[in-house]
Structures are given as structure tokens and as C-alpha cells.
Image 1 (cartoon, rainbow, N blue to C red):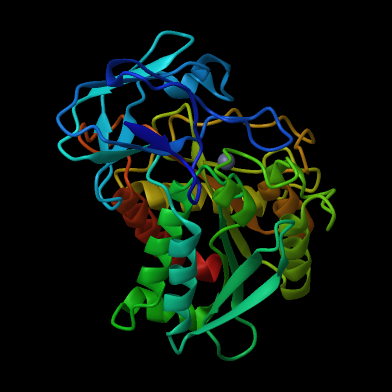
Image 2: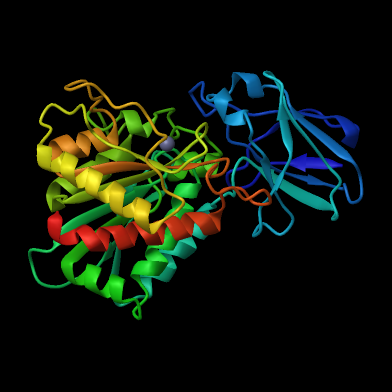
Length: 374
Ligand SMILES: [Zn+2]
């Protein structure tokens, strides 16, 4: 039996792996940070062998609420990620399985590799509607890819979509895949109308270094990018700096920052209620967006979510607050679950890449219904 994580977004340390019935593991911390929760590894040599795997340091992870009612993701073919019953006792996370095949992958959520990211950008670039560009480099020397969609007359709305500031929140890039497929379908009347009225700026992965390194939450230098928006520098958080400066140049009428939440088993939106320059119109727009999305997708709800900031108490280092304040526009953070949508559960797959794609389509339909209001 062998355990390996020396691949894109791999993360695990082996404490003990002598007997399959007692595999002891630890999750590695994000570089120069105390955050950890993302894991992704392969176990080989275990066909028809009863295995028990235990992550010994789960109790010290960033969001221990995330382990309650959580089921680990597993895959043989790296395409289909099914769920395995998992137990958390306050300190350790453990699960048992008897694999049908010689090797099996386990991951916190269905991974989204940098190779797949490169394919996503290259596929999009084949469309006559698309221009791709590189905003600059990350600290590890990776490209910050920007996809622009929709060219035409002046005066169209500037729509910004971005995902994976927190690299372990891979559901955010699965969402991007759904949004791009939907918008680039030349037979889709909603996409055609949207692209007539809007110019899209899409950053499908805000944190390539953290993604490749198998981080939960930070970039190569240990920066939590969603706490950098008003202080970003090229030395510490070039990812935010480059996007923020580009946005300052283009303007922004709508911004959606796509995330995953470890604890809450729901899809929800967080806004910008505490920004100093809050306008009634901004609040009307975010309510409108949520009301329409709730009608269009049974996977979206407004009952469960984060507490709103008190007036004037917004943290402007966070993207949604920063953008709503700097651009006076509608901005939002979309959160999807690592676990499942408790209102519409799927015991076999939980919240999954396909469901992320569906939610993205519903978000684009919502945007279409609101585009003239922005
Ligand atoms: Zn996040």
C-alpha cells in the first residue's frame, strides 16, 4: 500500500500507513500560515482491502464546523466524485471503505486542477466572442488569466466574475465552468442578449499558487486574498493587486466573487451592508438579485447565511465590500457548500461539480433579468 500527494493540489502527510485497517494521516498547513483543511491524495494497492483512514489533526483545522455531517469525496476515475460516510469525534476525522480498484483518490471536495484550468481558458479562447489575456504573474510565476467576453458598442455594462480567492474552494471554479459554457453557447438566447448588453471580465482562478500547492485559504506567501483588497501589493498579494487595478481601469457595474463555505450546508449570498457609502439602490439591487435567483434555483435560499455587518463596520479588505465601496455598484459573495444543500440533499454525491454548474446557469439567468437595472 502506498499513499501519495505529489501532484497538483495534493495535500496529505502520512503519520503511519503499515496496515490498511489503520492508516493515520495529517493535513499540511498552507505555506506561511496556520490555515489547513484541504486534502487530496491517492491510496494505491488496496483493491478489495478493507481500509480505515484517520486524519489525526482534523480538530485543529480552520473550520471544525466543516467536519460535522461532512462526507469525504472519493473517486476512482478522477471524474466522478462520490461521497463516503465519515465520522468526526472532535479531534479526528475517519472513514472506512473497501475499494473496488487498486487505487482510489480522496479529496475534501472534487479537485479542480491547474491543467483543467488551462483547458478551460484554452477552450474559451476558441470562441469568436472571447479574448484572453494575462494580467501578470503570481509569486510562484503562474499566469493570472483574464477571459473577456462580448465585444460591441460602447456603453455596455461591465460585469466582473471571479472565483477561488480561497483555492481550496474548488466548487467556485466548477461554477465558472458552468457560467462560461452557458455564456459561450451561441444557441442560448439568454447568453446572446446578455452579451449584447454586457462586457464580461472573468477571472476563473484568483489563486493559482494556492491551488497548485494544495492550500485551503492562502496564496504562496500565506496571504488570505480576501483580506487584501485595500492593502494589496505586488510583493504579498499580486493576484488581488493585478485584478483590482484592471477593474479600476475598466470600471465595474456588477461583481460576483464565488466561494465555498465549510460549515453551512446551503447556497447563499453575502453582501456589503456595512460599507461607509452604502446607497439604498445598492441594497435594492442585491435584494432583487437574491429574490430572482431563489425563484430560478431551488438550490438557492435566503434563510441561512452570514450575519450582516452593522452600518459603517464593513471590513474593506474583503473583496465584496471593497468593490461595492470603490465602484458604488452591486457586488456579492456567492457561497456554496462543501457538504450538500440540506434543503435538497443528494446522499450519493452531496454538493457536486454538476450542481455548481447548474447554479452558475441560474445566476446568469438572474443577471439577464436584471441587466437593465444595473
Ligand atoms: Zn472563501
